[in-house]
View (cartoon, rainbow, N blue to C red):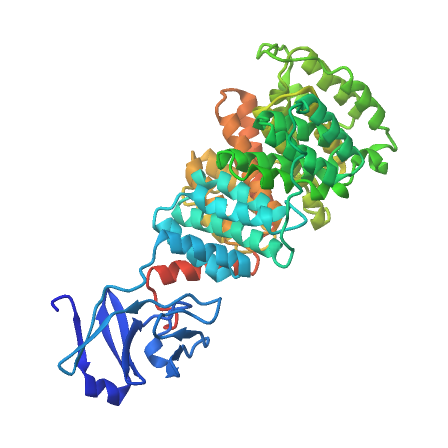
Length: 582
């Protein structure tokens, strides 16, 4: 009895119907209904409104704010957008009412995981947000949270991998650069986009591998079958071949080589999205330790049925035919296994300038020459990526707004090529370096005129508070002003850790579209690769990447901020704040 909380006389409760007592740091509503006494958390689990101000009828307690309904016996809700309310044991002794502050249904990580799945299934943003906040605050690993979204997204969207899973993977990649609130927002944004994109899209059922026999096909055979299936847009045949390769124990590297070879048989498929999606799928596969491999990789196939192939487009054939010189160059790509060197003799800064030139045929020759001089494909891809970032950094705001996405596509494609080659190099995948280089060439008019590289603000001798950048991005058309602010911050020896966290919040506080997430993740990742070097090119590359991501985010801000607002409601509820009070 010493742990019980005294409420009142039973008769008094019968007369008033409900009493509120304090227990566990919050109010507990004790209700009299149909000759029985019940106790529930006085905070409506939906948005925290006091339940003692609601009404009870026929065993159902209704909150008067949004009309969420609860079974007062179990606490279970009839409304999927609300959560179950916590219930407490009641003791009536000698006509006196007591409540035990230890709840029947304690919150647990297992329940939060289940609630996250329910939020994804019902596409309810607030439910997803509450689950993510609860899981993070309970110490659940981000990997486990992301895994729930990946499993759901790869199984419950018939049309396969798209932007939602790409956003979730990208945001999982950048978690080390964000503070706790940033981590919550990043996971939430990714999961919400998975849910929205999967809503009413049907469940995906795998076809299964080819029958198991004593004489199994070799990986060489399977690769040829897979390439042919993709060539003729037979995604069902490709799926059976892929699942057979997984069944016979193909390594992740072998699977990557097979799939990347097939998509680089064609040029810059789906304006770069195809290779980017493949790269992200293999990244998340690595994060999850290979779990759910069949569904993750098979989810990439539906898109390939109708994917555009740039070699078929007019811009790749006229006024300059890029297709034939590229095909010729591919036949001259050297075999580079274990034979590349850092002492390749290529002037890397000069090569970057060549990539930005209006001489595509010479660019093709210089790429091949670099490989023949034993520059590694990975290094070459890194140089192509920083050239693509320069297109974003120098994008002039007098261009049409939608053309931001054109230079963005090239940059994120080249980044995906770079990351893919870091995992596994092959002659076939190396072709994608050339695809990206030609896209940089085709984007040249979006730097005509070219935006000036921002200069340090001489009126600001020192900048250290990154909140100034967030204030700047509360206004539209601050693209160049934001770039000027960021170079001044860097010149002031500003902390890049704090800057990246602030840029992350600048993204995550918005109703950002898909490409903004891609831009942030690619720029930060590429910056970190360059940061490991000590050279003039490295310093310029780092600055270019920061300018590019800052300008891109600034050009797309502010928005109505509806999506992150829901997450902040969940954070405030978790802290016990009263949203219904001014």
